[in-house]
Image (cartoon, rainbow, N blue to C red; front, side):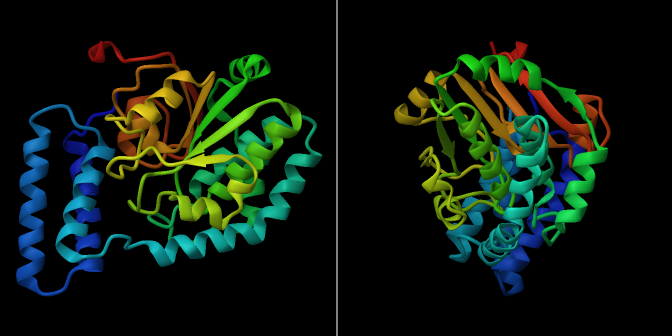
Length: 294
């Protein structure tokens, strides 16, 4: 289970300062919002709190006090548009591969670098395809995943960032071509938070034309919600296989069922936690609750 520790604080502080400046003007207002956020974070840190829950606090306070509910809206629209332009290239790459699903999984994992909150742009297709050819997973549960998918009727696919959902679309299409009887449900965030996928983003890249797309409900959080609505709980608990994209979903706590995590390590804290260096590709399997959650 990933919990916020002292190593997370510089990154959290930098993100808070950036967001405050993006959404708020006037030193008095800025200082007031900063004080509210600092107090809430200190209060939360007295117990167990994950990085996604800290982000949820920050966005709730900023939206309430600045009136800006989606500070990354323009960046999300741009990343979706730029990634869609590359869609035919990625689709062809997976289609030509000897193992189409394996290639599509690799592309989806590499799509995790399409992160405007970190990079500020969508990498070109050559960069991503070069990594697909030259990079291997540090943790690779693909074989186990395929064994389960062979017998599964339902797959719950928990999305991460805008832009990269175009690569997620390629993976879902490839899975459906291989397993036409598989029912896939894709999960967005329940509202704007950082540059994560919302229902609008999923529709913008045509994902809703391919699979069922839902929102989990509740307050937006950049991870798997620790508090789930009865409707989402039924889908989360009842799906044969759950695949969660991105670090935010990996960092989420209170995961009480088996989940596959597919992501690229993008920070030193996660690198230390997993034992693998930054930029490593991870396709891991979590069998259920961590020991201290039981």
